[in-house]
Image (cartoon, rainbow, N blue to C red; front, side):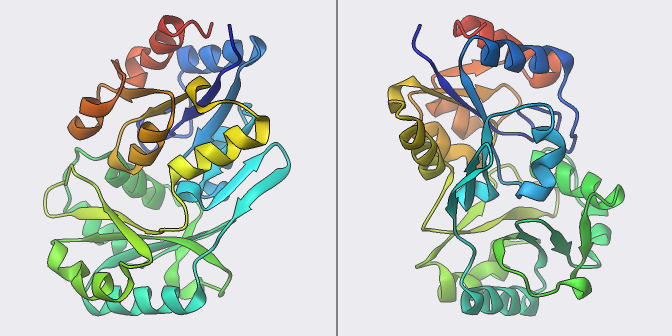
Length: 274
């Protein structure tokens, strides 16, 4: 069997949403696939700091920050923070419209101080909402926005009540930045990410495949939400979790059970990776 290059989203795919703990069946599948010669990468919206607890389980590298920072082992393959002027414009326009913001540098994250209060009003049904709620309640390395120290930022995560609040920022930045809005909105809470059009998870997949000289037909991607779209469209074979976005399931090669239901192990077995 040809060596495969496997890309795994974290929240809602490799781990239950908001968790850093990989279920035993999924971890065993990843480890066995790597022993069989396959390469397994994380492919996530998380920055390197937020994905580090999961990376510690043993992976070959990661497409981090939704593609803005890519590394294989200790080698950095791609590094593209936001332009400072764009960052300042986006932050100002979002704040003026009452949008709640979280910003991610390579090794730290900051959130608006009243974000926790806002999320308390939001319902479940979205892995990103669950992750940020848990991250805030557990103080998972997300510092108050007042402590932001000016280091380069790769991504702005936004949460608001309606899309009209995003219009000024869209008008100013949409030419160069993609406003990725989740298609499963929790009650009274719309969330998404402001991501540089210079990169995405799909282009991150290509960077890693080129680095190893692996054909895209030998790549496999696992995801659950619309921020995995470009990865799912790029890989040779795509898998969406049963708990995932209906739109993503429609275009994926395979739908597998949720990770809590041993779905990742089931899919690895079905694809002959074990």
